[in-house]
Length: 316
Image 1 (cartoon, helix red, strand yellow):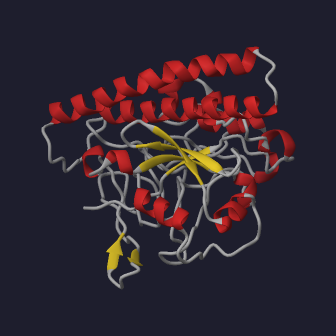
Image 2 (spheres, helix red, strand yellow; image 1 turned 45 degrees about the vertical axis):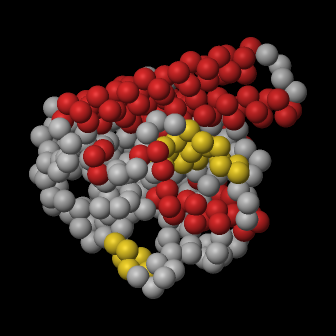
C-alpha cells in the first residue's frame, strides 16, 4: 500500500463501494464486447462490418482499461494511477499507468524510491518488444494482463510505419487525470502536491486555473469527465504517445493533442464512471486535424473542441 494524502470529502467505505458499483456496471459491457472481439477473430467479415466489429473491439479495450483504472483507485484508497509516461524533467508522474519503451518489462526509469533509474533505449533502437515492455511495466497491466487491450484494431501504425515511429499503443489518459497538464511536479518522491498549473482565459473573459485530480473523490462529475482517449502517434509525428492527452495548448479555443482517425470521423472515449462513448465529429477542422493535415490547432467556435474541453476541465 502506498501512503498518500487524499483530501477525500466522503467516507472511505462509501467511496470504495461507489467505485465497486461502477466496476460491476462496466463488466456487463465487457462481456458483450468480448463476444464481438471473438467474432472479429473468427469470422471473415466484409469491409464495413469488419470496421464496425473493430470499433466494438476497441470499445471493449477502453471498458477494460477504464475498469482497471477504477480498480487501481479502489485498491489504493482512491488515489489515481499516474496518467502520463513522463518519468523525468519538470513533469515526472509517479506510479505511471504505462512506461515509455523499455529494454525489459521489469525496468523502472523513474527516480528512487519510486523508480530505479533504469536505462532506456535510444530512439534508434526502438522495436515492438521494447514498446510492449513499456506497457507491461505500467501499473495498470497487472489488472488486464494483455498488451492487445492497449491497441485499437484499426490502428495500423505499428504495421505500416517503419521504426522508430511504429507506435503500438493507441490510447492516452487525459492530462488532468493525475497526469501532466503542464503542472510542475518537482519534489517527489515524498508527497509534494503538483503546482504551476496553467491559467486559461475563458470565452467570457474570466480566468480558470487548470488542476489535476490526484484522487477519485476530486472528480465531481465522473460521467462527464473523460479518462481514456484514442490518439495517434503517427498524426503527431511521435515515436510513441508521449505524456498524456492535453488540450488548450494555445488558449481556450485550441487543441494541443487531438483525436485519432481510426473510426471514420468518430472516436471511442472512456469516462471516469466506467462507460464508453462513440463521439461523432462534426466540424471539418476536427476531421482534417485527426487525419494529420497540417492545419492550425487554434479553432475558434469549434463545437467538437468545446465538447472535449467540457470533458477535460475539472472543477474544485
